[in-house]
Image: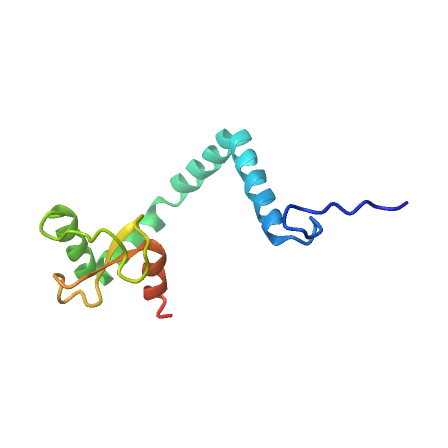
Length: 126
């Protein structure tokens, strides 16, 4: 039996095209989640209920280790007019999902306006 090779819109056999595979997987997972949402929520709720103490301990540990960071974030969120964001990222022309990056939490007034992608890039030290 001879199989017919289906060519995708990118000019590659469909089974080889990573973009087509990725799109198929996204659609599959969205459809699966839509069909099984109640079951998924029940499992997630059961997990949360059985791990409340662990979550609370991790949260308290994070708060102890990152007191400066939390304090600066609260200060920025409570006074958005005093610490405005620029209209676009300072590293790329992106104007969506803008955030403040603090190079040093000892000086909270010094921050850089970056998009979420560049912020991840900066935090990873790339």
